[in-house]
Image (cartoon, rainbow, N blue to C red; front, side):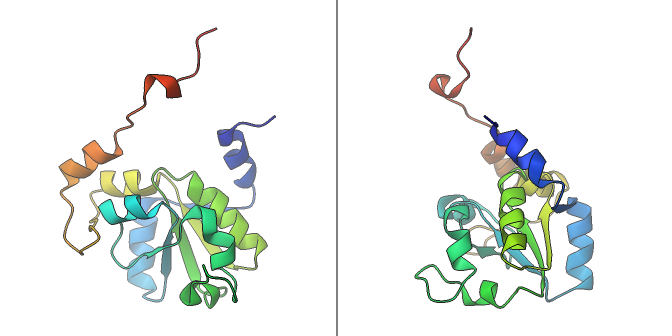
Length: 155
């Protein structure tokens, strides 16, 4: 049986990752670049990279195809565009980028370190209304908050 991080690691043999400063550079060089944020809508509403498209990981594959309720036309048409997939920490985005490659996306990569790293690199984030997110508030948001029942049982 594999664990979550082993699954992510296995996908890294096929998935390219970019660091936040690389994404900043790619955004300057390629205005047609599409950022796909695969976090849940409540996460996206709290903060995201301006101009990114929210397609939750759970519906990604059907959102990439025509004729589904989840179809995202911009995403379906992006198979030959440069696409950067982002999430909170850079793990879900690796799995999503891997799936997109299987679906025929040619220029897809994952943001290594996710939005946490983007924030640590002091890049801007906006909320659902387009307002700037205070990076100190983002620090608190990105700090893991695990309940006791989520922790691995002691042997």
